[in-house]
Amino acid sequence: MVLAMKSIVTMIVCGLIVLWAYVYLSTSGVLVLSRGPYTDPPVNNQAIDCTYFHGTGFVTITYWYSENGIMGKTICPRLISLE
Image 1 (cartoon, rainbow, N blue to C red):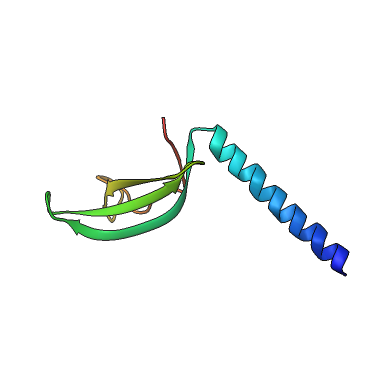
Image 2: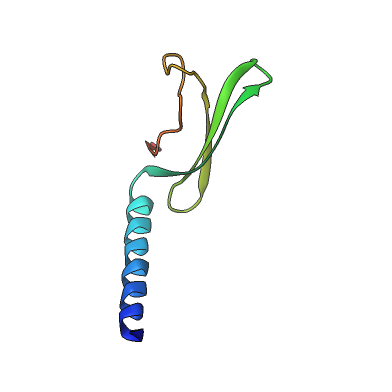
């Protein structure tokens, strides 16, 4: 029973390391937090904040919010390219 638990934990840790290495070596960002919609005071538009993990840290990108998705984003993209 203990040996089976150790192998499961080892597989999970190895999987997380592989995922981190992929994000670290690529120029991709993975969504970890989204906030909004809220009113952005300087332009008086609706906005959403999307925070992404990119291997060594976090980056926050603000998008215009639009309910229909024509003039802005309705939700934060799950994966982005940070080139």
